[in-house]
Image (cartoon, rainbow, N blue to C red):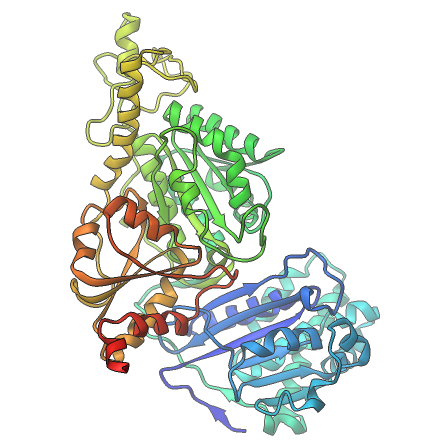
Length: 629
C-alpha cells in the first residue's frame, strides 16, 4: 500500500484499548505531533465511566479520536478511517463506528480465548468474516514491545505498559511525524521516575517506528500525507477547553487588576479546570478545594465579598447543589462566575459523557424570580474568550454569570492562536459615587454604595476595608436605596423588577447576532449553541456545496438573547435547532421569542455527527419532501 494523500480532506484516527493501556496519552501525544506539523485537528477523548473497570471488558474501553487535515477541521469526525485496537473489547466496541474499507491495526497478542471471554466474544472476529470489509493489519504489539524494552531491565508489568509508546511510534511513521518532540516531552514526563522507565518507553517508541518503516509488513502499512492547514498567521498551540477556561480566567483577573479565587469540589468532567488553575498561583490565582459543592460556591461568594473575583465550577448534579448559594450571590449582588461543564444526566447520569442538558438549570433553575446571564462557549479555544466575557459581565452588572461548556468541549483539543492581550479592553468595576463617599451621613453613605450605573444597573464593588464604605449585605431582601433589610411589599416588587432589568441590560452590551454562514434571510437557518458549533458548521457548508440555501446562526448568549435575534430568525422560512438534549434551547426560543423551531435532539452521550445534521437539513429544507415525492 502506498502513500495516501487526502487532498482537501481529512483523516479520522481512533485509538482504543483498556482504560489502563495509556490510550489517552497515546492520542494526546499524536495530537501534539499533529499541531507541530501545522495541520488542523479536533480531538474527542471518549472515557469509560468506571474509574477502573475489569481489564479487557467492553465497559472498560477507553478511546481517543482525532480528525486531522490540511483544511479547516471543525469536529472530531463522524467515522474513523483508522482504528488502532489494543484488545478484542476495543475492537468490538469500536467496529460499528467504522466505515467500510477502514484500516484496522490489531494487537494480536491480546486476541486469545481469555480476552474473548471477557469481552463476551464467542469466536475470533478475524476468522468469522466480520472484518472482511476492512483493511486489517495484525501486529504482535505486546511481543514487539517486550522485546524492545528487554535491555532496560523493566519488570514484565512495566514493560507491557510501554506498548502505547510502541503503537505511537508506528503511527508517527504512518503520518511522517518527527519523534523528537515526543522524546522531549517524555523526558520531562518521566524525570522523577526510575531512569529505566524513560529508557524503556523511548525504546518502544523507536521500535514501533522502525517496525512500521522496515519490517516485512511495511508494504501493507500505508503512509498518510497531511499537509499544513491554511490558518491566519500567528503563534499556535494545542489547547483543551478546560485549559482554555483556566487561562481565560487568569487573563480576566489581569484585565480587572484583581486576584481570582477559584473554589471547587471534584467532579467529572469539571475537575480538570481546578487542576489547571492550581498551577497558576504566580498569575494571581488561588484555588480552594471545599468539602462539598455548597461550601465551594459560598466560599467563592465570600471571595467576591472580599474583593477578589470569585469563581466556582462543577457539572450537572454539582450545579444543582450550588443552587441556593447562587441565589445568594444574586441577592447580595456580587460578581460570581459559575462554570458548568455539562454531562449526561439526570442525577449522576453519565459522568464521562457529554450533553447540553443544563440549559434549563442555568436559565430558570433557582427559587423565586431569579434570572441570571448565561453564556456558552462554542469550542475549546473559544473558552478563553468566553471566560473573559463572563467575568466582564459579572463585574459590570454585579451578578453571578453562568458559563456553559460540556464534556466534549472540556476534554477536546484543537489548535489555538495565542491572543494579544493588548486587544482586550480592561475590565472595570462600577465607580463609587465620589461625592457621597466618606460623608458623615450614614444614610447618604448607604445610598452611595447602592447607587447604580444607569446602563448596567450594577452597583459599585465595595469590599471590607474600603474607608468609609462599610455596608450590610445578606440574603434577605434589601431596601432598594439603602441596602437595609426590607419587607416592604412595594420595595420587593421594585427589587424583583430591578434584578430582571439588570439581566436584560446585558443585551445592551453584547453585539447583535450575526449569521456565520449563508444569507441573512432564506429558506432555512440552522441555529445552535455550545459544542454543536463544529458539526453544524461542517453540515451547513456541505449543504451549501450541494446548492441548498442554508444559513448558520450560532448563539453565544442564551440569557439574555441578542436584541436582534427575533427579527433575524423571523426572516427564515424554517429554523432547525440541533442540540444534545430534549429541546431546551428550542423551548427557550419559543418562550422568549415566540418562534417556531424544528428540533433535532440527541441524548446518547456522544456529540452530533455531521451526517446527522446534514440529513436533517435535507429533510427539512423547504420543498425537499415535495421534490422527493
